Image (cartoon, rainbow, N blue to C red; front, top):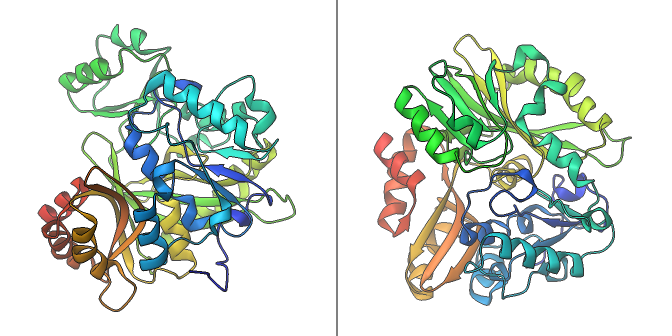
Length: 420
């Protein structure tokens, strides 16, 4: 389906025409970045930019994102694909979920560097490769430096950062520590989505963190545990055109597990924005201008904790698209008008069963309670990223129960149903 009018907010608003965007992360610790996401999920989420690329940015994704069944459902039945087919570049089909680790990185890099143009590639977490300088718009080391938590103090005022208790050069050094101030948060400084975060309340928690991170080569640190009242993320846009103003795209609330893993986000279009004004001021007047001065542009975000007395702490930089960027754009563009809870899920069954059970509640209309943004299909399993739509938070548990009853398998939905 062709969209006659383009939404105001998209990747095209911030990147130059001809940009080729790959929502991808190197496997394991390539690029000094810890990524624990399994390949089948990495392949699924690479399709996210198809919803928010805009007219002037091309999308690079894995072949599974454009398989006939899921692509047809998203484009023809649900009308969520907002790019032309000619804007989509696909990696070779032989790079699938069976390929892992160093071999996966090698195949992806070889394919990328054959298919993209000079200085056109933008990647969520870029590869460090001698060839990369030729292809990446933004020098890889620049994005990698900004995505490393230990560098936040270089551009964020100290009052907005948790105290750092101790730093460790790698997992082996971290394993040698006897005790840490408790409670604390142990983090792999270059990681995302909670893959490299462990909240430690007891010595047993510390020992488990040592077991989880002991094999890693990247830097690890222990920071102050902030007792939070609310957990937010702010999304911002810095245009490649330095004459354009820096923008706050949206704020949303985050759901995390007791371990610190990101599970889903809540966007409420009518959220009271007054509490964000002090943060907006420091972002727009100090932090983001410094980021622009260092030569970075695009869409990104920060995870921010708020205490009961409304003090704010920046705890995680995300100089890239994240899982919530699509929903922040959809809300800002008024395409999704309801409040939403994002989640990932699986559906085990045939195409007919998926169409019979899931499509009726996902199609636009007054009875829509599901907004699907990404979909892949293989061996009788559909994998999807979607949003549960609601008016009041009191509805979430009941809607989550309904989605589970229809066959969606999701930790976020299970937790939401139980919480109600």
